[in-house]
Image 1 (cartoon, rainbow, N blue to C red):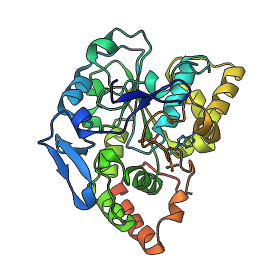
Image 2 (spheres, rainbow, N blue to C red):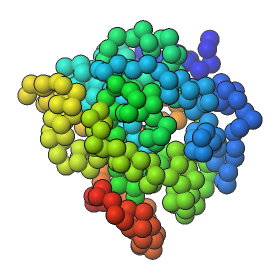
Image 3 (cartoon, rainbow, N blue to C red):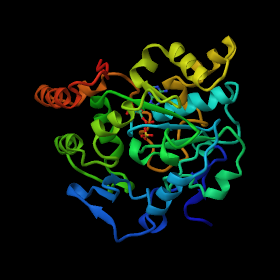
Length: 316
Ligand code: PPS
């Protein structure tokens, strides 16, 4: 049996085994190990997880897209899975597939782990297709909004919550080399941009700069939390969909944190190492992790990097 997809009793869903260098890294020479075992590879100057391989990246850059494709993008831990579920349900009358999982319905071209996709397979799939990416603008799927017809949606979240969520997600995981640094270390490398997917500020601002593009919608996690229906309407209009009140209610219900955490379609229980994925789902949970001094230091850094930018975030 394929070691990667072993059948286990998870409601009939195939189990996705944990990340392994020998199955998913493609090349081992360029894998690097940093402090506290932190594993990564670098492509075009960007630190990436080892399952983002040179050949998968090439496919993601050159895949042919269609005007009704959607590609959602984010720095990790910014609410992209929540957005994915919303997108899937908008495109499917608010009804989740019974025999699939959300993750298996998405196309994450840059990844060789969890539902890897070949170019031929994706090219024959019917429209509309939903692509996932965690790349900065310069490395976007299909060349990005300037050269692709597809509709891009970028979601950003306040960096203190991202930093904490990412710390919990990366700690002890196979794809991060079982990183075992303390929180202070993580905070430092996050601010230095020495984490997989690089510097949060560079990533978010690279997309923000292009927010006026007609095929890019820029969203914030905090807006989705505070005004779900308003943001849902915005996304639906961008995708050219008209949602009935009934479908809006269905989507709102199905994408609540509590429902996503417990529903087999969205709860990721079929993926090894994703146990703590639905952690808090709140604005401001960074307060449980940062000391006052760390928060002040972060704020100084944030003010410096965001000076002159019109982009703002709610931190609580
Ligand atoms: S990943 O692994 O990079 O794709 O993670 P991503 O999905 O972008 O972000 C994970 C965080 O989003 C929270 N989340 C939600 N918040 C509110 N509502 C819903 N429905 C929801 N679903 C996921 C998830 O809990 C992670 O944040 P933290 O702060 O760790 O809880």
